[in-house]
Image 1 (cartoon, rainbow, N blue to C red):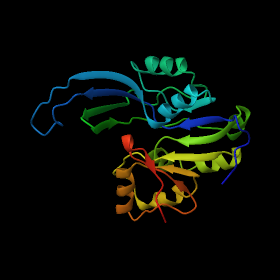
Image 2: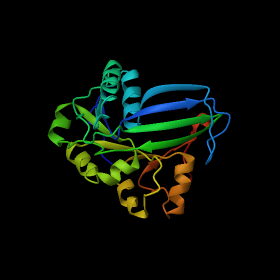
Image 3: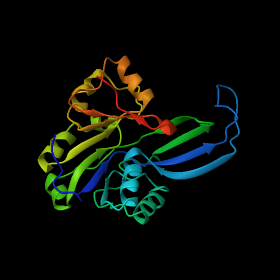
Image 4: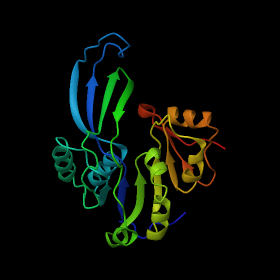
Length: 225
């Protein structure tokens, strides 16, 4: 593991940025051939990288985001909103696909389901020298799928002397091949369902990586063993 260079070092969050349509107060989850009416609807900036960057900025830490922003008409609202929160977008780039990159989130009671369209590339090229010059000390990857698509990110982190944290995210296309990538991070943050899904692939927490399982309103836990 690489120690951070300075206590107030900035964080670079990388991963897909979505426009989230959040449907709330559902009487039931939709099923095939039926229709469900939501009690509420709101639009948000989404994706683990963008959310983490916003939280870092909110607690007064230098927060940088590296992503391809969603295509029009959502690009302006997403970029303006993130900048207003204090997130530095200098490592971002325009969308590489004209298709909207969106997530539909459906909320019923304490349960959620998601339908997502990811389009184009997740993140633009990154240069270790530029990252060092920005005073960045750690790298946060917003989803395991992004790391699988950009396996060079651990090399970037080593070159720039960054610690690495990784969210999991759900992806039915993941295979056991991601074990080596997870092992090159310092902190892994799956939720309970994601951890169980990885276990079906034969993956268990690496003793070399600090793993924290998030459990929503129930907090988080560190697996034993």
